[in-house]
Amino acid sequence: MENVYKELRHTGFTMLLIFGGVFLLCWFIHDEMLLDQLIGLSVGMVMVISSIFSFKSTVKNYK
Image (cartoon, rainbow, N blue to C red; front, top):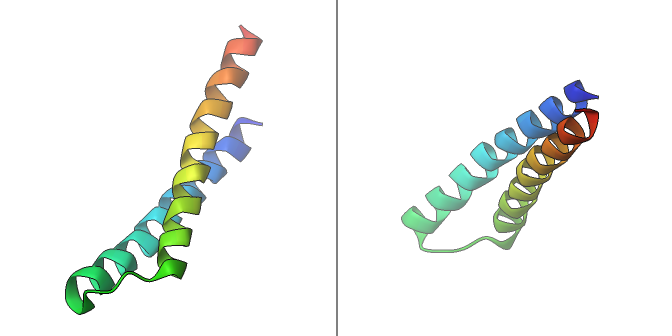
């Protein structure tokens, strides 16, 4: 089960990198905020945060 949390965290970081990078580039270069990039960035953050909290609670339950 630990591998699932690791992959969820990896996917979340990848989404943060891709969507966050494009969001910041479009914001700084064209001075526009794209909603689809902002949604992707938010989903990536939720995935990373949920994988961290889920992993910590799972480890605590095993001890």
